[in-house]
Length: 91
Image (tube, rainbow, N blue to C red; front, top):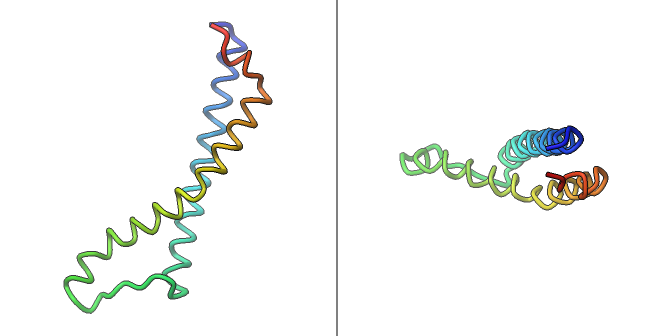
């Protein structure tokens, strides 16, 4: 594999990794905001409410995280276009 191809793939993976980490962090912030603003309620007064608190928070975080997936995909495709698909395809 030519050095330029290797560097292009590394740049693409690092860029996507940074975007995924940013999306995960923002999903945590959005989930916390949903909980504090009352958009999501967790009943901690019963054992059933406490038992489903974790899955409920996880589900909300997943929905917030996955709502950013189209943006990550679009940015990754634009970055791959910027790098050049021909450069990424060299073997």
